[in-house]
Image (cartoon, rainbow, N blue to C red; front, side, top):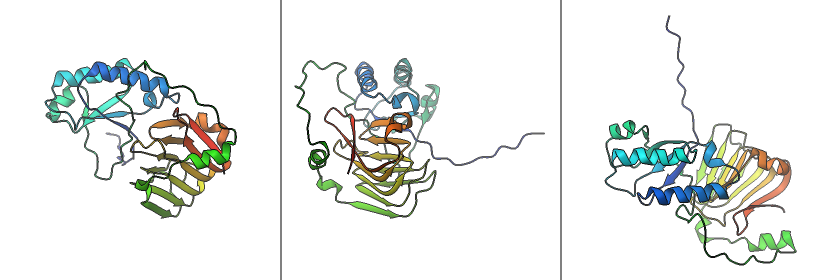
Length: 253
């Protein structure tokens, strides 16, 4: 007797990397640099899709080399999107031809073309003394964030709410839920799920939660996972922002 197979539709979080050219040596250096700058190792833990919409004349041999480039860095490239070659060649290269839905929000990792080693280092600035007031005063307010989407209610597990500007949630964000914004995120309630602010690469974006108990937090592709966030769980009126070196700052306000 053939066993029954239940098919379910699930939302799978992936990282979408946009490639600007076909130079795989340059890509390898950029991946090394990003891995070194990301202590959360988020690249190693999540499936990756390469967005090739900016490239032309893609060949099967190059797709194989692309997959092997990611494998050498222990990264899980599962497919490509926006590729101009036939799907059968993509499949023969061991990849999937992925077509995202119109409402799909990409997770952009900025500075992908940055060199592995910088020959010029900027001098380290003196640390601020009045931390809370000066941190808040230093956060820019960009005009592009003027569009504020407001969701009034609880965000359930498996649900995803996104905005191309700011996003305000008036309620609880449950574990397993995702909230995504190109701008800032404000949760007037408990944040237990995953929050992605500055999703278009905006480093000045920030996240605020009345109660912070997040599974994963991201600002402009800079991540911290549940284990790293343990020290901040249960914090009230918590503001998360990025320092100039792209490390995360947690401030009580």
